[in-house]
Image (cartoon, rainbow, N blue to C red; front, top):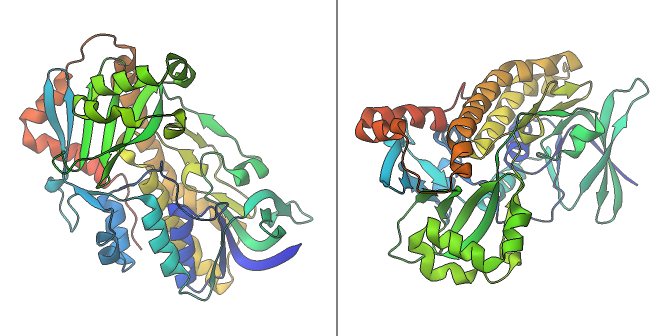
Length: 401
């Protein structure tokens, strides 16, 4: 078994893991990031980068590089089309600062950028194709690293601190015995690609009808489509067959009617089982959870990546100096959830309210769906569109380097 010694072992090479690894390495902290896949190229991942995260990337000196990524698409307004018309509901242009917009960017491009920046620091190491199977415990039960399965056999990483950034199905969370509390979600999401034509609408399209909604993200020559269904409804969807899915997509998004035949097999479709949960405790001696490992977010608002990155920045700012000078103790871990639990609770609370009052009734509807009165009001009063822009784009308690 190969043994690697590191001050910090970060499990998961997603946005939170790579941002945390990069920030710790910049402070001179030896950090090893384990990523279970060979690369970052997985199509159906969240890719909404909000103004708060764009500001953090500026502070890292990566803002111009992100802006130049080939798949990046700026979105300044969000509108929703109901059966009775299209309503503008969010205007990021009303935000102050350098980034009054969202950026939709393929997540693999962003992760490659972060990884390439991190490996420039001698204290950073990224190991791919390596999946954690268990944690290492000292004689007193304290977590002292992980055991992982790599391409050449087992790897042991010994570390003063292990950070689980490995998502909703966190292997670290399971290994240290922490369990999330399910807060409930009425929907799942089916992802697929459809081609995009030069004369199609740029940016983001959201269309609502009885039984659900479809969200189309502009990726240049194709749309990444999120087709929202009732929780647990995927098998029933499959049983009705692909022709029924094509018909439903065409009904929800008539502008895509001429290309739904591109869904030729169920291999073209991926399921995201939506979870909204959080753990009561984010840490045990020697180990910490952040991002989706600590709190899985609803896709509402596309805030998951941004909350995870904010967690990583707070963790690096709070723990980094102590890890660098050798004064870190397990008592320091509590400062991270003390900083990050409030924005997590508030954001999930807003998402749960939206699920109950908007998505739940929508998924149960069988006839035409008209816009709620609140959205009509927001469309009529432009100043009101800045409120959801601030909540979505900046969030609660945004972090800085």
